[in-house]
Image 1 (cartoon, helix red, strand yellow):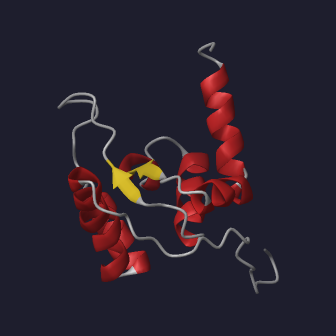
Image 2 (tube, helix red, strand yellow; image 1 turned 90 degrees about the vertical axis):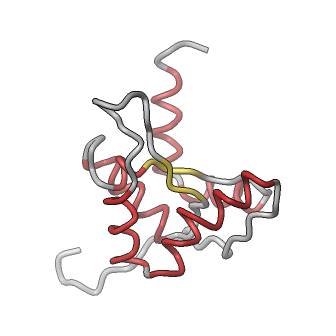
Length: 125
């Protein structure tokens, strides 16, 4: 696989929630990075992460830790973001319950995905 193929595929996937939902229905587990959720990889990545969470497609939020300086293993801000927007149960599911279950080989329970786009009642969008 060429090095340019992966970003294109990731970009295509984040635009196609129905495809991701089919994969999740078939048993795939989906992980996003906390940094994406906080906009550290750009607005498009942030918007995609939020849409995936809104669609109940995400099973884990992980750090994209590469080292302690540029990409430290820090998830506190992402946890707070999820807590504020989706509540205690969802934050605990994504940051505690599912990672623990995966670590110990237990079943990762997840709600049914809803990949339909959120409708806006605003006159502008």
